[in-house]
Image (cartoon, rainbow, N blue to C red; front, side, top):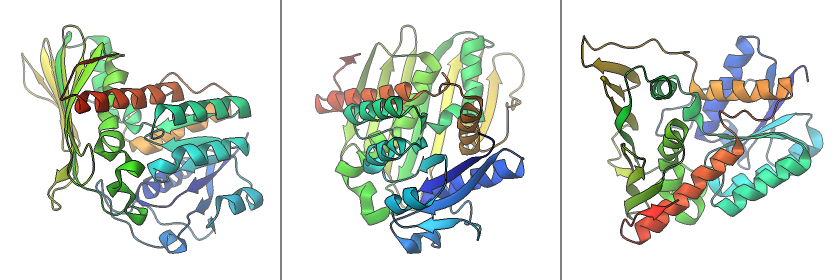
Length: 339
């Protein structure tokens, strides 16, 4: 495969960041080209979409072919890889459809609404002999990879405690208001909280147990406070879709090690050592995390490797399973659920 041709499925807010990623990789000389975009709403292809993490990242070049039907796309377009940016409740259905059509699939998170759907996606990829990756993009974010390196290398000693937050107003820009329908979005706990649940697992492995206290507002599981239990560590993560409409999206972490505290806030990482002055560490790369995510999948396709251990679909499936346990805990008033 000399040049990977990509079709983006769904052109809402997050797809604009994916489109920008393809433009960036093309400019760097990577052998990947966005050739088509499919969206059920033809007006969406030209509409400006503002989301909680920012406004439009990219406009469609004039030479990109457009479709309003995935069946028509498959029948008429020559492409190798599908990038699924559809609402969460459509991830499993369309990933399976495209895998069975012989396409490699990169799909946005969450992998699916439940573990059963995740298993069906993994089985479809196996049967089709095609690769599947889920967009757990923090695994490619330089600010979170620095924290991962601190944990793995022990440069500041052992981790003592970790606090993570992900806060936003209720998303209201989705197609037919799907974010506001719990049965389609899964609530904040599945759509947004899963980022930090997945990152904690990436950092520390599987927890011994979990517990969550959640509040329902416009949707179920709109606000949550979660404990993930690891021996000798305190890990607390919070998420909210209940911030004021004028509040900007915010993600942060605060990690206390034996010899330093490492903080991420406002897009910047700062190390506060026990001895010496605070400093901003050198990060591994400066590319946007979605660009890095696409790059990683591209090279797995080019090199013919299995999906790497950095972000296999089986791990994305486990993050959905943990979310199911968090819901069980919330339904039982914050009970500790062993994994």
